[in-house]
Length: 165
Image: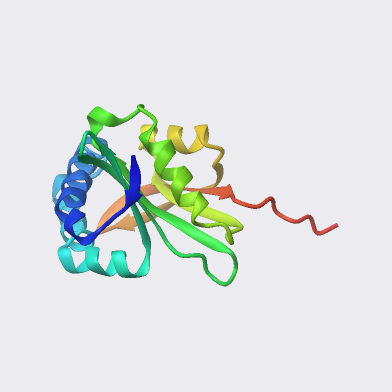
């Protein structure tokens, strides 16, 4: 089941973010960099702000939250961003990611494009996006909390782009 996140879900979402980040980025991003990122971006005040300003959905299996997805609202250009989609490792490849994505897309009806950024070495994440009709736009180097990373930018066309001709 997929439903909108509520404030009492914050501890479960924090745990999922930590567990999935540590699993996914174990040999890609140093643990201290992961810890700083998670503490900053998944603190209770930050999660409350996300609940207020963005759309967050949780995946529930047997009354336990096992994943979540976070989408920005559509901007004036018709763009939105999938800022996070995480599942506990034991629940990956069971269709919950696709369900989270579909619920998010259904809430973005006025969007033209949905962007997502993923670390280039995150093979599971890249495979998920590519299997769900996201198109790779570019790869670039950036500094993530003092650590160099290569990032892939993908787009999902919610509405087909209009030709200039």
